[in-house]
Every structure is written in structure tokens, then in C-alpha cells.
Length: 365
Image (cartoon, rainbow, N blue to C red; front, side):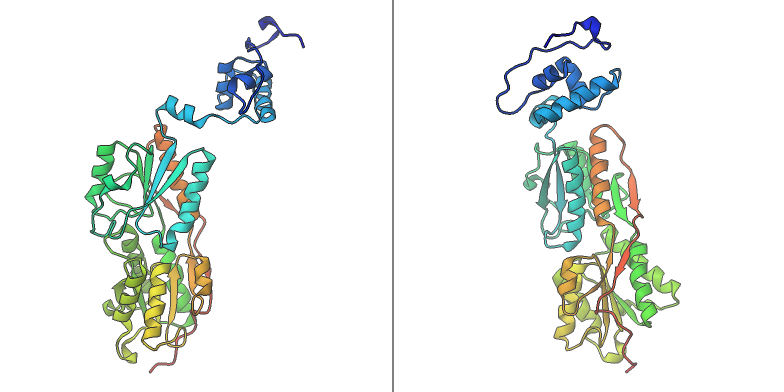
């Protein structure tokens, strides 16, 4: 086949000499197959259409697809002085609440060809235990970090970000001292739970909360109080206990609220997350009470585990996957110079998954 001169090609692209392909196809081979020079192929494969014609762009894309070409991410990372990796720090890998968040983060990372490093920060992270970031193994290995455990007054977050000069986005947490965060509308989430219980006839409702030093725990607690007031119900302090967002905390909180005479107990509990609800159910059974015979239980965080508890748990399904996607995208955008912000996810709205842990209240003792 003859080779066109530069005058015959409207956009003046040069032709590279084809090479015999061995192993993984190269950018030079794509350029040769498309009849353009290497720099043109590189720009078009990165999405830089102008000033090239649409037909030139299509030739390059078709050649890349036919040859099975994939960009060399290691070379690209070296050129951009990046690791092509981001980190996600969570306090506890046993917490079901991070499952869908993780999935959303992974989706965005994969779409943009970044590696995701998941790190458990350890017990006590974001709850006053302090965080030794140096031991997490992320230094020099990631371009930015998603942090899913900061407390509202955790000074380590800001200090670490400034010292490491790494872009960072808080996930499902917020703090006044840091401008980049993605959270859910927790007042709305809790309002769905309270409304469900009220519709069943409950008026004596307690709350196994999260830690009030975390933004999430505080906003869920505030949402509980607001929803109770909206329905004309009294918030009784003795029916509120911190479940710590973990199993043992949920167990201890439920015991604190329920280990009293029947006349002094609530008929329903709103639990701030699923893993705390598992501890709550355990305490209820240990006290010789039944769900929903003696009291109903409802929790935030929909997960397949909720179908297999005894009894199956009514839950609120929140937009965790979308939260993960938005947080990851904000972090990656910040790597390109975009200024991050504080974002609250309001769509899709929370959904109620009704199972047999909620029912009308028992007759008054």
C-alpha cells in the first residue's frame, strides 16, 4: 500500500514506519496503523480532539481497538510524577456500612485506571484513640487519600494532610477544620426510621446512637431528636446510649437502655448502624426479651446480613455507593487542580426495607 504525502493529508499528520508487533502493542504501532505520528496518536487517545479532524480521531481509536492497545499506566504515572493510586482509610473492616462506599470508590478508581489501597486504621480511629498515620504504609505510595473515620475535633487529619501535602477527602465524616468532605443527609435517614415506627403505633422510642464526637453520629442523633419533635414525641435521655458504631457498643448500649422494669422501657429502638444493631439484638435476647414481641428494632445500613439475623432486621438503605463515587471523583478531580468542597448526598433518597424486626408495640404493661 502506498504512503500519502503530507500534502495529501488535511491535518498534516506524519506517518510512522510500521513495526513487526511482538507481545503488547505499542503507541508507535497504533500511530503507524492509523497513519499519524506518535504525538498525534498520544493526544487523541488522551481525549484531546482539537485541532484534529473527527476522521483522524476515529482512525486512531479504530487502530487502538484493532490492535488491543492499552495505555502504559506505569509510564504515564512516571511522566505525571504520580503513583496512579489512592488510599481509602476505614476504622474497622467489620463495619458493613463501608461495603457499598468501598464499591463506589472502587468503581471510579477502576474507570480512571487508578489502583485503590484499602487500609484499616485500627480501633479507636476518630474516637479519641489517635491515629499513627506513619504506620499505615501509604507514604510515597498514593496520590491522595479518602478518610472515613475522622472525628469532628481530630487535629491529626489536618496536620497529616499539611505534612504529607496529599489531597484528602473525608468520607461520611465532616469537620469544620477541613474543606473537602462528602456526607449523607443523616437527619433524613433517621427521619425515615422514626416515621416507620410512628406509623406502626410506637410512641416510646429509644436511640442507640453513634459516637457524638463524629460528625455522622452527631447528625444522626440530631436527626433522631428532630424527628421525634416533629411527631410530638418526647426524647428521654435514659433511652439514648452511645453504641460506638460497633457490635460490643451496640450490646452495651441496649443493655443500658433496656435492663430496667418493663414499664420503664421503650417499645422500639432506632440503631445508628447495622453492626451496632447486631449487638443490640444480642443484648435483647440475653435479657430474655423478644423482637418484635417486646420491642421493635430498626437500623441504618442495608446489607444482606440484615436478612439473616434473628429476626431479620428492618433497615434504611442509604446512598452509600453514590457517596463513595462522589468522594472518589472529588479526590481525583483535586489531583487535576479542581478545588474540593463540602458535599451532601441527597439523591437517591433513603429507602425503607421492612422485615420482621418491626411491628406494632405490645400492650402497655
